[in-house]
Length: 203
Image (cartoon, rainbow, N blue to C red; front, side, top):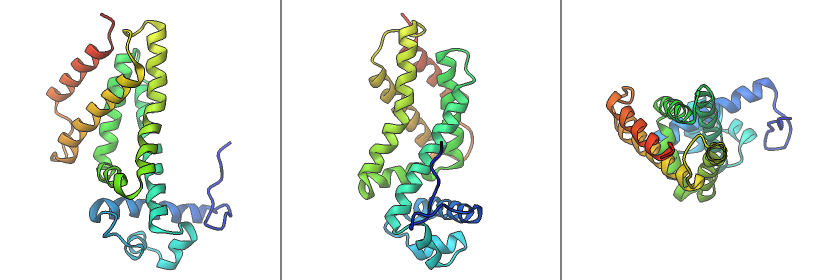
């Protein structure tokens, strides 16, 4: 059962309240991404969301509170996108590639993700750890299952997970965050596929 989303007083939010909270989180993604945590303010967040500054405090009790919830929100959404993409794969390698494709699509639509996660290192180190722990949990389990079934070669699932996550993050940074808004080039995806196959396929 999904836990009800509440306001700062612990009362469940109405549909209208959920919509306002969503607007605040969407505004936070833009404001923290554009200005950075320290130059962002609750007034700017509220203005971007189209609500009064006082309304902000019905949903979050501080700037850090909305920053932390934004990290959780982006993490949930990127994991959902990747799981949905990878679930269409007929093999572990194909699932990996489709999961990476979904990750790149998500980050091209939400480039602030990179900046926000990097800010978390200084603003909220516990949320930085939360983000990578949550990203890696299901990934590790999937690789463990594939090793046990013999579908992929024997490897350390945790080490392989973080190595592959690092590859995906750096490719996304180079060709999405620093890119021109175009999809990942075919040659880059081809190289990514070659690397993934070398890591995962049984030898």
